Each structure stands twice: as structure tokens, then as C-alpha cells.
Image (tube, rainbow, N blue to C red; front, side, top):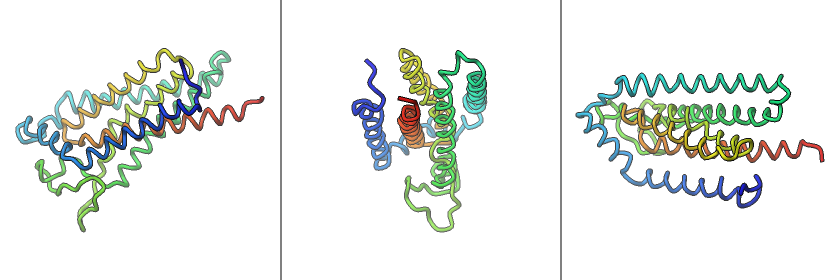
Amino acid sequence: MLLPVHSPAFVRQHLYWPLLLFIACALALRFSALDLYLADSLYRWQGGAWRWREAWLTATVIHEGGRTVIGLAVLLLLALLLLAQFIPRWRPWRSGLWYLACASLGAGLLINVLKQLTRVDCPWDLVRYGGAKPYVPLFAPLPAGLEPGACFPAGHASAAYAWCALYYWCLRYAPRWRFWALGGVLLLGVVFGLGQQVRGAHFLSHDVWTLGLCWLFATLLYLWWFRREQEASPG
């Protein structure tokens, strides 16, 4: 049974519990060596070099091809928005499509802005993995004179995880498909994230933060968006 959008149970299930899980995972990664352990394992597996950095599967198919797929999805969404403006039987979907556009594009923008503000390096930039920079733990201050990076949160994974809002769109218009939509988004995000980790572009924590932030953005916007719609409707 579907819960009312602003019921305490709905908010607990969709906001509070995911937020607690995200915080627990983020803290576990921050105060453990799991990021380095996994990156070390990938680096050793490739013979002490990021041999998959420019490989056809990771660089062309997953990275470049993934961006193309997401770009086509954005164009499709914009086309649906345009149709909903002019086709009467599509107009009931208009608000939901605008929500989906704002949530997906807004989450992607948030991640890309944070990448510039957090100043975190990619694994391939670090001395530990053949680069030139020292490893600095997440959120630790940078040593004086060290040029900042721009690798956190994970930008490519956000291209998929930004579409977590599909879950909420389906919840409102096609409830039986909501978990299929979310599963597809999560699967694509995992593929994008693993592809970048194998290339040396990100640690696991970068992807975890991206997923957590995208989910929270989609959830908070959903709660605000349809409350605003309800308050604006007559009666």
C-alpha cells in the first residue's frame, strides 16, 4: 500500500532512514582504509598502472558512451515536456515531468559544483598510484601550496544517480514501476562508478557520496514540489 506523500511514515522511509544509512556509510569509509584497500587492489590487479584508464570498455563504452546515453535521456525528457505543453491528454503529467527535469538536472549541477569546491584529487593523481600528489583524507585540509583537484563527488556516476527522481515520478504516475526504475538507475550508477574506479578516477567513497546526495536532493524536492502543488490547487 502506498503511503501519503507527507505522512510521517513516508518521510521516515524515504528521507530519514536513507539519510542515516548514507551517514553511516560515509563515516565508515572516512574512518577506515576501505577506499585505499579497494584502489590498491585495482591498481595491483592492473600490474601497478591504470591500464584500464584509456581502455575501450571503460573509456569509450562506459565513460563516453554513458554520457551519450544520458544526453539522449535529457533530450527525450525535454521533448516530453514540450509535448505535455501542447497535447491535452498529456497535461496531467506536466508537473511531474517538470519535477523530473528539475530533480535530475539540479542533482547533476549540485555534484558538479561540489567537485569544484571540495578540491579532492583523483586516485590517478596520487603518488601512491604513480601520480605526483600526496594522499589527503577526505575533508582534511590540503597541504600549503598543493594545487586542488576536482574529483569529489563522482561526476560520471552522478549522470546516472541524478535520475533517482525517476523513482518518485513512477511513484506518482506508475507506482508498480517505481522499484524497476530505481533498480535501473542504481545499476547504471554502479556500472558508471565501477568503470571510473577501474580507470583510477574515483574512490568508492566518491560514488557513495554521489548516490546519497542525489537521493536526498530528489527526495527533498519531491516533498516540496508536491506540497507546493497541493497548496496551489483550489479546495
